[in-house]
Image (cartoon, rainbow, N blue to C red; front, top):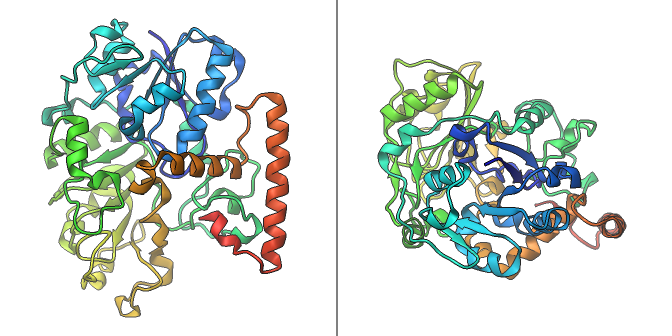
Length: 437
């Protein structure tokens, strides 16, 4: 079966789902991936099967527009949807949108069977509008080693990364001149000035595909203070996936990095499990962005950092990880690990004491730790989620999925609203900055 995979185009730095890099690795010739802004009636009519991502709640409004666009131009097509947010609300999605299939829990094997043409009613974990198969397949520890990384099916992804400025480039972010553009959004047009395309201050590394996540399922290192994040809901996550957390071992991590090195120049390593991971003696020809969401010390970085040709590491300022109560005392020793190709940055906040001795150019915005896309309260409040996702979609000016008259109306409404807020901000009547966070 050939399928068109559609990724919402809000292009928040984190809207992509890490599994996109391996979910279609064994079937990359059977799928094509595009962003929703590329959709046209002609493209929709070329396919009888669509896979639509709904991984983050901020994609919810755009997800509805994508489904309606498909149905308008290809009423009889199959539509499979999936992603983390979908796991929480798939029953509501079936009631609200004209979708056909959803895979509960882990989806590598069920998705492979679906693309191989198996009857959906025979596929484990598969749910339809009028059936719900038993959830019998779970990702296992040994399945980490079967992942195959491939993005050939998604050509726009690499093209869009090439348009963005390098981290640490001398680009001033002019938030006040564009008061309605969310801080984390990146425009898709190459003609837009760089300072407007890179909405997050150009520090730290790029979070991009392929991404390796060392813990799978409920967060294996969640602690007090993490309740805002969906991955910290341990009991719920175990119920959704019918298994405990899984943690990648060092041997598997090395094997997967070697595989990625053969196809890509860059990688993101998201360490959300207890280590230590020791890459001593290995050298990967990769430009890596590494984030530690767990307890770490300078020795942990010393065993990882030199293994990559280039690397930027993002850490929390607490001994517990990104969130905590005790400030770390090894910052000076961490900076001793640096050289021209290896840099370390810290998630911090205005309230952090100056005694931490983290230079301003090495401080990342606190908003990167607590972004809207990860907040648990949005996932448990559908009305709040749809309102926020609609606001972001409208603020970024996406409107190609609307019918012609609605496109015109949306453009006029956005222009007027932007002008009103801009003038009100100039007059000191509103805080314009709240519209960009």
